[in-house]
Length: 190
Figure 1 (spheres, rainbow, N blue to C red):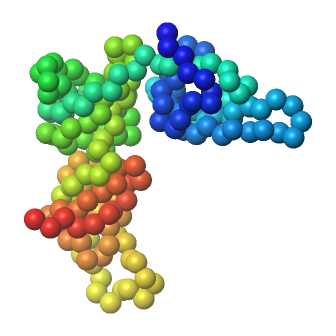
Figure 2 (figure 1 turned 90 degrees about the vertical axis):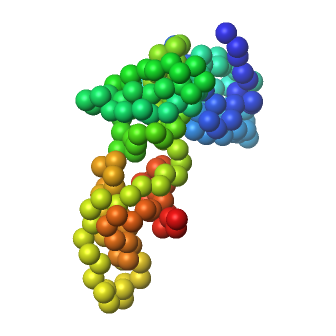
Figure 3 (figure 1 turned 120 degrees about the vertical axis):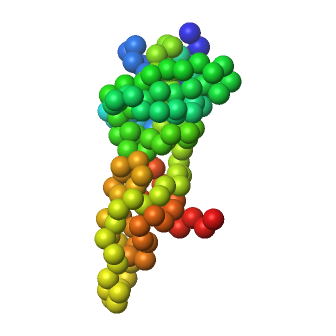
């Protein structure tokens, strides 16, 4: 198995510690006044999404995880599961809702997602960073209620995600959403 030194680890790399796959969140090099230098590494578990912190000696080697990332198009939902297709091989796989997790609120048919495989088994489905979605339901905006600056109201998107939008957004309007934070970014003009 390929290994990488703690000095070469960067954010976003996929490594394996104690037989478990992790994504590196951050790698901080620390050189105390007395003693050997070390690296303080924050890791996010690929399967459970739990974040841990490990301290490793500077120069220590870490295994690179057997992770493959593939872009796949979501075809349809089947109960709670979602069926994805690899656009190169046309191979279809069904991913259970438990693996998709919080990303299930961003699932839309005919949209390309980043599917992460660990040892040939899908462990995560990541939506695109920005998605364009139609507002299905929202309350009408109150005119003149802008004294407090940016006024937001709840809205429901076509995928079922609940987002906060400005009061000028109306039903059936197309908006751009940041899927990392679930925040409204802008209107989409056709």
